Image (cartoon, rainbow, N blue to C red; front, side):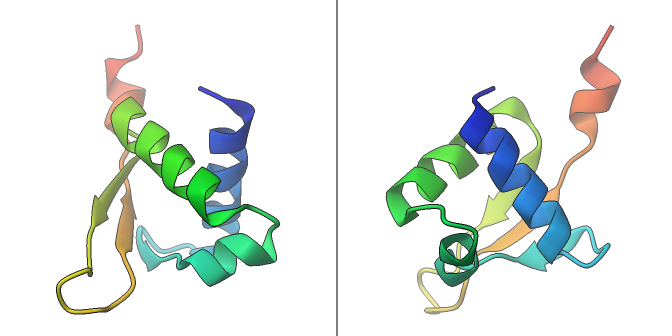
Amino acid sequence: MSAGAKHVYLCMALECGGRRDFVFPHAAAKKYGIPARSFDRYVAELEKAGFLTKSSGQNTRTPNEYQFCFSWKLDAP
């Protein structure tokens, strides 16, 4: 996993307030100095690795909702 994806995961952990389900808009990423296109790429990387799931709010014009997944802990030897 890239360093940028790890940074995004850490920023999301700081912003979620201890909740498993949370919203992390591009404005929050910008607050941490993460460009929008890089943010999208890192989120896709985190999804592929099994750290996050994303439900898109595109059709309802609401922010994307994210959820931390812990299946990666169970898959480790």
